[in-house]
Length: 234
Image (cartoon, rainbow, N blue to C red; front, top):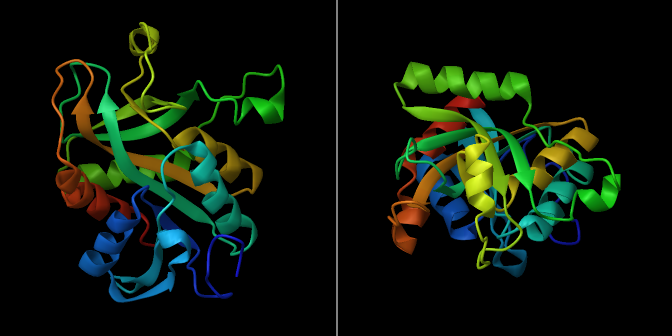
């Protein structure tokens, strides 16, 4: 067992889906996985392992924000030997070209957080998703007939924070959406020589003001979950 994940060696698959919400992890495991077994409920951050079309897959909640996500990702990589990590979460759209309920496949993640800067000092590190895995996710989405946007996102350090045009500038430079975890996921995967990708479902729109209820955020992201599971099949 690691400090924050109560799994024994071998109980976590090499492929792990990472929703922020632990109840979404529970929903994914119960809805899509065969023979799902809960391996951890430490701090109510649920983790499950089962199979999808014969492939062994785990689903681990990470909580909100990069400090929480970094704990679980680090332990999955260092303690449990995870090799492929796919974040599946919600985001806010930053451009009118992206509609609520649509999917974003992240290619890179800018951030206003110091969590990566503390590692690299004055160097501006560019957190990026694994190219081959991300391309495979996009190809799988095409085969499934799913509409998506692929490009840059922003990993914000705080949910409630006056941005004073900060996000507008990022949107002007191609950022499609804002969430709170992917920048540190991409960095840690690079450090541990693992693959990481991110699929987001747009739950609210920072331009139009549209948003989904908490229940819709938890269970309404079927296409995102199916895309992730279909993409990690060997």
